[in-house]
Amino acid sequence: MSEKTPFYITTPIYYPSAKLHIGHAYCTTVADTIARFKRLAGYDVFFLTGSDEHGQKIQQAAEKEGVTPLQYVDRIVAGFQDLWRLLGISYDDFIRTSEERHHELVQAIFQQIYDQGDIYKGEYKGLYCTPCESYWTKLQLDENGCCPDCHRPVQEVAEEAYFFRMSKYADRLLAYINEHPDFIQPVSRRNEMIAFIEQGLEDLCVSRTSFDWGIPVPFDPKHVVYVWFDALTNYLTPIGYMDDKAKFNHYWPADVHLVGKEIVRFHTIIWGCMLMALGLDLPKKVYGHGWLIVDGAKMSKSVGNVVDPIALIEEFGADAVRYFLLREITLGQDGNISRDALIGRINSDLANDLGNLLHRTLSMAKKYRGGVITKGAGRTDFDAVLEDMAAATFADYTEQMERMELSAAIKTAWALISRTNKYIDETAPWTLAKDEAKAAELDSVLYHLVESLRVTSVLISPFLPVTARRIHGQLGFTSDFDSVQLADAAWGGTPDGHTVGSAEQLFPRIEIEK
Ligand code: ME8
Image (cartoon, rainbow, N blue to C red; front, side):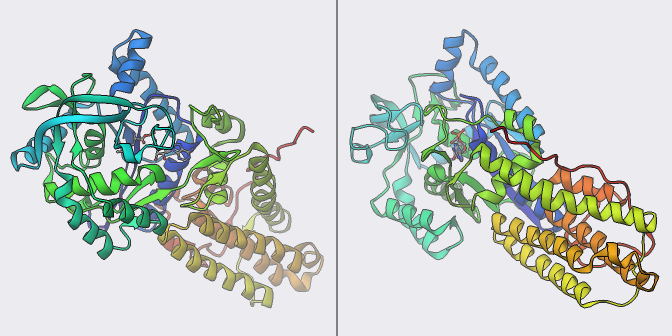
């Protein structure tokens, strides 16, 4: 097992019932950025995503298309994996709940909890929302008697079922939440969960008999395991819960389960009680992010306001889409996405601030010094200000990233880019170039520009992995970009006498048709 400190991060596993939209891509992009940052900072990262393939909804959709559920999900899941490739999602494993390795684990866990008396047989009478795969009590329904999450009608169901004794764990879970302020974040979500548990927890129905696309209960196979009970255990499957105890103990408990705000309840209450029943530690953090909204409504297929991430990536490139999502939306809050705002960010931040800085720097280095960068003599006041700013940027950025304040961290990195553009105006290298006596000063200016861009490429690499690599290459560094570490963002890494490469446009400006 690696000597490095482990860091285990997960996204939800997505339902293959619809094409993924930019809201799903948001969650995965955030997790990917955190995973990339942690790798850069020297952690042994395990980043998991996947697909949640069972349940009545999938079975019905497959029947409608005249294919088996597995044929139905195979095609859709291949689409997920294409999207993650296009978006540069660096997951370490992709778990499908239809896989054998996952079935074995779900059945073993169900059996274990049953054997210890925490799952029992009873009769389920209640209200079920098929689209959300959720059971509700009458009190929880919305004002129209519909599902409080999606506001669609619920169905009354009565069937023999197995129940998980969640009620037994309610007090322990509440005490745990109170004693571990970091467990549920942001704090608004934590307060919601405390209020929810304080109302009292009922035992949870964890099996169904009305359909069969699921994992059979091992000792009573006419029942299939409730899809959430099945899905949540995905987090244990790839890290060796069944077959590699050393690996499991290395990565568990998870450092972050990143989830949308509407499924924090499943990840803290149901999952928390399940883990307690299994005698396992709870994840260190469940972070509920906000939604991407369009005209005030959550983007979702049923509302019909979805933005297709593949079309956006094909038009603007993955890094531009990533930049927009990470910069524009404060983690934990809802955020708007619009084509105009995306184009605005591309033109001002990516093409103008960053792209022009790189282009100007490399052109001046070529023109005045044949591309060879030397440290020059002395340190002007302008140089000192830029160096100090780079050091402060590195420190602030690192703290913000550690706190998962991604939007703040990318703004911090961009402030260095803006400051470096200002430094060009202040030092006016074109004037220095006309005066032989200022040769050493010009050398120093060019060195500072290259160095600032090198530092920038390290800091933005978790956000804009393709762009960061291109900057590294254009600056003439031949070392493997994958071996760059966070510590390389300290000032002074460009060696004296370094030769830069040629400028290529990073981001073309997008012309807006009126
Ligand atoms: O909930 N903005 O899957 P899912 C931001 N299979 N995030 C959004 C969003 C939007 N407009 N729409 C959806 C499930 N999401 C379960 C998870 S985990 C054991 C099982 C996010 O495909 C949503 O908040 O419906 C959730 O975190 C994720 O996409 C998966 O949604």
